[in-house]
Length: 304
Image 1 (cartoon, one colour):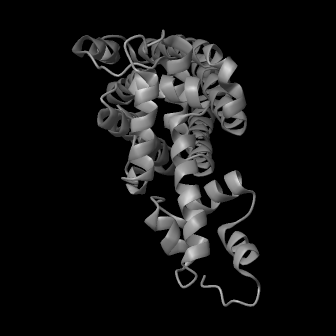
Image 2 (cartoon, helix red, strand yellow):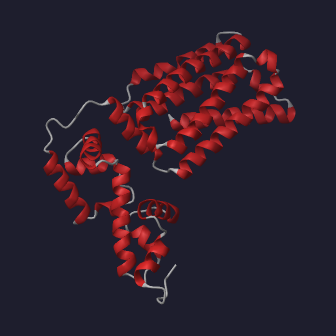
């Protein structure tokens, strides 16, 4: 669904480009309006598993794309306005879903501000679409193209600032909607197994380790492991794994003085230098290089 969403927005941007560049009339075709109808359902089906803590996809959900047919049945202006009206319904759902996660907002303060701006952009586009006759066709397509580009830019900033945001939002949704899933789980035993996987098997070193994989190793579901970590350890899965990796990195920075900071970060499971530095600074309060220097002394030559 994410790929469908990106492909639809890219197609719209191409249509806007050629219309504004040389007056290409594709933006006034049923196909263009049909692509418009794809955007809101694709975003809904992409974000629903994250915002509602749902793992399964059912074929009947594809019925959300049925309104695409209206683009080829109704006159252009009617179909165009109806596309933005349907988008407004999905925006209401999005607002309600984000509001339901308000108790978890302390985890996503900056991210939520960015997503709120994206939401405001979407609302403005909706209003422009419904009042295209007032705004003017050319002005609308200029503003719509700018809005799509700006939304992409802000989403990329959010992902760069918090690469684990999708996992964090999913975990917050599970806490918000799910009832306790630990009724049949021996929590103490599961935590002991978790500690063994981290301390002896060093499973945190797998850079593609995710909640589902770790839960499978423990014989739990993703929801059970997420609830176990939040209720018994007081932290999310992503936070727990970052702490395990940072703790291992702290020891290696002191013990392996000939190894570079980057190689140590990669060896404990981080996928890039920026992810390693951000996590280390967040948990320890200093960069890896400064931490190593403070622990082994300033007279030692420190690899970069």
